[in-house]
Structure formats: C-alpha cells, structure tokens
Length: 512
Image 1: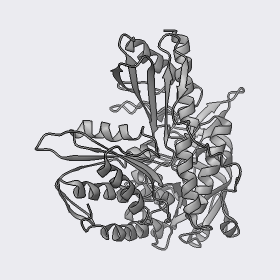
Image 2: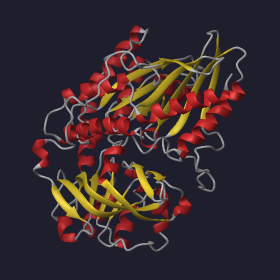
Image 3: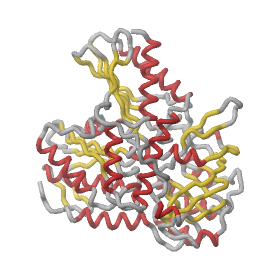
Image 4: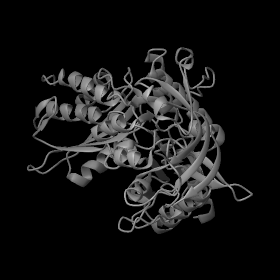
C-alpha cells in the first residue's frame, strides 16, 4: 500500500468530515427550517445554522469549533496491514490539526496538559474489523463534547421522571428514548440526532448506539418494530417544544436510529448516543493496493446548498428589535434586558472555559474584567504569515459545566455578561439578580458565523492551559445572541425544561 497516498486520503476524509455536512444531514436541516414558525428565535437559529453550513464549506473550515474526539471504524480485507493504517491515521490527525481543520482536543486526564496535536493515550479512537470484501472502508465521526455529555444509559427496569416505571419490554425502551431527548434540552445543540443501542453490556451498548449514527438519516430499519419505534420517537419528540437550541419550537429531533444485540439475563441496558445538528460523520472506500479513494459515502440524493435562499442570521421581524451593546457594559444596561431580547455586542470579549473558571476561583484575573463579557468558547486558532493569531472557528461551548463557578466569578470580578449555549442553573440565575448580570445564548455549532464577527485577536493569557482553554482577547463587531437568563430571575431554559417535562409526561401511557 502506498502510505503517502493513504495519508492524503485520510487527510481528505478528516477535512471533509469537519468542514462539509453530508447531503442527508443537510436535507434534514432543510426540512426543519421549512417546518419552523417564521419570525421566532428558533427560526433565527436555523437561519444562522444554514449560513454557518455555507461558510464552513466555502472557507474549508470547521463547522463547529469543537471538532470532538475523532472516532474511526475501519473495515479491512484479510491480509491488509492494520498497523500501517493506524500510523497513517495518526499522521493525518496530526497534519489536519496543524492546518486548523481540527482543534487540539487531546488532554491528559491526570495533568490536564494538552498534547497539541489530538494524539495521546487511546486517541484517536480506532476500531478495526475484518471482512470478506476486497476494499477498505474507513468511517469517521467527529462528536463534540456538548452532545457527548448528553449521552445517557438506562438499566431496566427503572423509574423515569415524567414517565414512571420503564420495564424490560419495548414500551420501557420507548420511555428511555423519549426521556433521553428531553434530558438533552438545548445543551446538546438541538435539533439533534440519536443513536440507540438495546442490550449488550455497559460498554458494548454505547458502542452499538454510536454505531447507529453511521446509518443514513433516511434509511428504514429492517426490523419492523424498531422501524415503527424510530418514526414514533422523532414525531413525538418534536411535540416537546424544546426546539432548536432549546429556544422552543417545532424541531427538537431530526433522526433516531436503533440497533439491538443480545444481553445476559441479569442486565438490560438502553444506551443513547446524542448528536448535535452539526452531524459530522463521513466514510470512504479505499483501494487496498493504491490507497486511493474510490467512493465517498452519504453522497446520494440532492445536496442542499442553502444558497438559493441565503438569509441573514436574524429574520426581518427580529432584526428591528436588536439591542446594541458596547463592552464594557454598565449594570444599568444589563438590568434593562429581559429574556427574549436579541443583543448585538461590539467591543472586547474574553474567552473562558473550564480551566479558566477553575483558575479564577483562587487567582486574580490577568486583565480587568469589570463590566466585561466572558465567552464560553474554545476556538480553533491559527497563525497567519506574519505570526499573528487568527480565529478559524469560534462557536459557544455548553455552559452548564461552569455552574459551580460562574456566579462567584461574576461577583468577584464585576463581569456583566456571559455568553454560551444551553443555559445555566439556579446558582448562576441567583447571582445574575444579586450582581446585575445576564446570560446570553449564542447558536451552538455556528463556529464560522461567530468567527466572522471577530475582527481581531488583541492578546491571549494563560496559554499554559492549551489553545481551547486559554483566555483569548477578542475584538468583536455585531456579535448576536439571545437573552435567555436575565437579572430579574427569569430563565427561558428553566421554563422550557418545565413545559417539555409536562409534554413528556403525556406519553407515559403504554402505547407499544
């Protein structure tokens, strides 16, 4: 096998997966757009998502800044050297990371040190299987942390909030799957897709669930009971009112795929792998002699470019109501905001994720944060020819991870606004009222759209935490987000959670 050609084929696979959504996923997003009510926050989100898909493809840059943990599934004919493929994958991962097609995400679990190239113990994940076909198939999924953290596993029988007891039967499985969609809310960047694994043990069940995410969005399960359940889950989940980004709306789930395997009598697991709207998976067939790509998967059917009806990130109805803010922001300006307001920020903002928040609890800030904006974001960064940092992708990360710290840090340093996705909890909400702060929800996955709002990188602190976790000083213009938690005790996230739980409970009665 020609190893240089293999490395090039793998480089192309990784780049395509990170920057260009497959045709079946695009069609699902278009369907969601057509079903959404015009002029709503959900419609605005879907417009932004559509524009982001266009920009990522045109720029050949990551759709979402969280390029996830690369997971490869490789099928090889008997006699193919799998060790050579492993080394070629590692080389391609290293090179695509260096070229900012992937964000450096490999972190030592004990020290927190970032390897800088997405390589480390156990990373990337590679799973091999031999088959009798005469070509190699390599599948890749890039599943970010926001949706990965919303994976969930149930051990039947069990009690489920809103649905009661789930037994060891098809109806119990139904209840688990519906609950898995409810519990993700907007934190998994809904509208999403789910893969479900029934049976196995704890580890093989999750493997089976993730394997379902490689299925075609529009295929039909060969098992008629599971085919019926897949259709039912999507239809029912879209009555919950969670909607895109958890803003409420018609599109909560875009696809459900279910697989089943045998189990031992004592254990009955239902494992769910949740995937965000930025459903980045691709596969190629490779000639085992030349290592050239002979076929790309997921290329059948119409490709939705979204360009024929290219729209601004806000609808006409909402664009007239945008509130302009310039950082630093005063407490008076913050207390004038209420849930549902759309704001556009110009000026300075600072990124801060898990490492920064943990650090600031016991250290002084490297900059004056009084009146400033913290952006929950781990960007993809690159250096230009002059050696200056440029932002390649910069969407929001899931905010709930900072719940133990956020309120205390806002009070300690005078921070007025926090931007992220998926909302935060009661501790932060209480602090917003006491301090005079606001939580702004940006559109998860829209990494190209927000990178375009960043006009310059004015500095960086705490680089010892690695590129995703450093504090980047960003000069922004027209950075749009929605107020979802205000200083008056209101939280859209809490409201949607409550109303969707009530709608979930309507499906407690046995149907299957």
